[in-house]
Length: 115
Image (cartoon, rainbow, N blue to C red; front, side, top):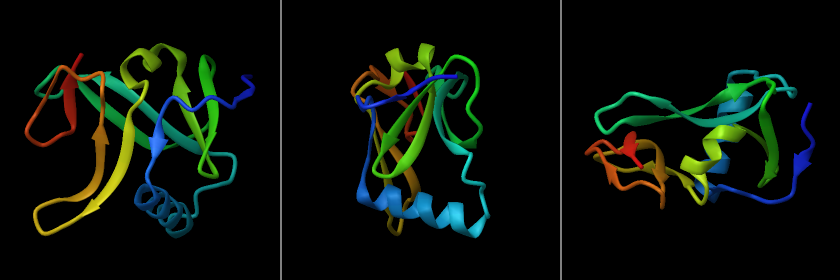
């Protein structure tokens, strides 16, 4: 198992934290689950984001960010270091957004990127 790191490779805005807490409560997500942030191959720009509650797995790094346990595979850090996750609620867009300083190109919908 990994130990909790005090360094924060990502940030969560206040809006994102509120939505994550609401989702955790509404869906009765157990306390032993953390927020998994990651990437996977695919999407129109090469990579797409992973965001969901999950159990700690081998090769995960665990962080405490704004009172939320965040899980990330160590190998994903190169793509996610410095990313800001926000919650947007507007007429044209509603959902989590990713502001990734490592992305060299993003798709129009903002859910995939290349690095």
